[in-house]
Image 1: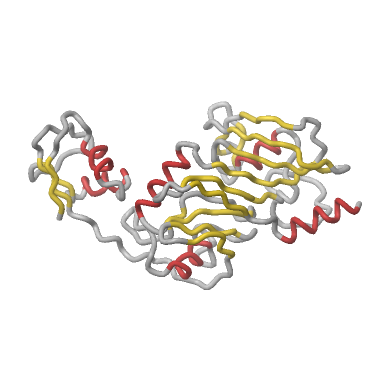
Image 2 (image 1 turned 120 degrees about the vertical axis):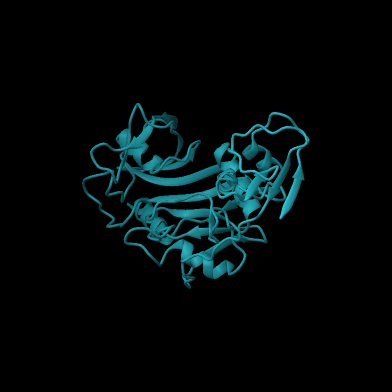
Length: 300
């Protein structure tokens, strides 16, 4: 139990708690208020309750439940590891979170095995603090938070677009521009709910690309995204007529390399460490299958 004497007028209850308790997310605070785990002057109030100087807040912490996920030994390359975060190089073909048809064998299962007891408990459940995602068939860098404060701070960095993400992509066709920006809103496809699509009523999506190398029928790109919409790079590149090689969802036609899954790799991340504020820059080399394709193109 924790007692707090309010020293400010007019602040929302949920916002105030988040400011003084940086290791609790706002959604968790609202859940605790709803469950009467946070009381004001001994009474349950709404999250929007406007505090007054002298109000007494009591907080009864919810002990996170054990996750139903099972730890599994799955080979994962660890790029960086400390007490607060772990950054891994996710291989192509590995699902990040369990879902329909993927109840185990996921990155989340692997992280549970690697991190043991040091994991985030945001949402009331001890679970891998995966703060952003990559598609199953996209490889590259992912950040996992080991505690709630790191999870919240890292999530805020991503939300505020303070994390610089660089991808490498091989696309079909020869792009003439050396550099360009694609700004097209993206929403769930009305024709196929499993796909995303450019939609004027969708959420803002901004993708920058720079040509690294041109081949006879392909272009190698460095891609930077300002927003993190689902399938963003894949949708944008397909929309401008240059789908990513191997992407069967957003591309039809010949796949001369026989690659399963798109040639898209999250190569580098730049961010501030969520606890120490140290500037971090991490890189993961291209996977072998991607390097092999580029080697074939270089020799052709």
